[in-house]
Length: 218
Image 1 (cartoon, rainbow, N blue to C red):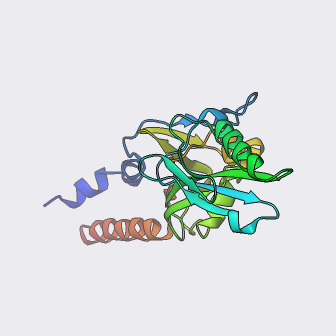
Image 2: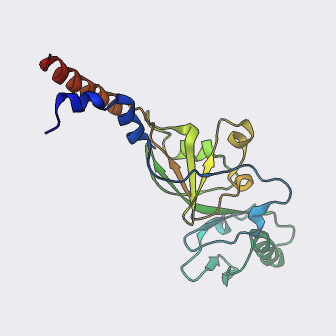
């Protein structure tokens, strides 16, 4: 059993430092990408959806899933593979198919990526999102951050690599998922504040315990 002197020998800031250190390497900074739209080179994954709007033909419009074999089934057009297709290729293929069926048809195609929103968020989970949304839009879609959320240190995880989304930077806060290079399968993680109400309460209890032991030994 440690003595009172042993307790007094351990400064409170050492406890704080121990709690703050999680052993993870610092993440890479994530910044809006300039130049050519990088998302055009990123294909769809199983579980993603394609939102198709054929104006004047609501029966052909809707959100259609990409199956486990990377096949997409559209009304009238039928089933075809999207394997190896970029988003630009997919748009061209669908517009060409509908253009052969309906003259002067206006068709919009929007990929809907599956993104996991995790951590200090009201409704964490897997979401199908439009890449033209911003990080703030995604957080709102998931119910918004909790009171313990550290929004300034949001992380994006991809293939085991961490990227930091510094929303304090205006350019990043306004950037769309497409401009940030967010892809299907990425995870947006909202970390917990270092000093939350519960953490402060715990530290206060520890400080009171040390004080009581110190007073008892006087």
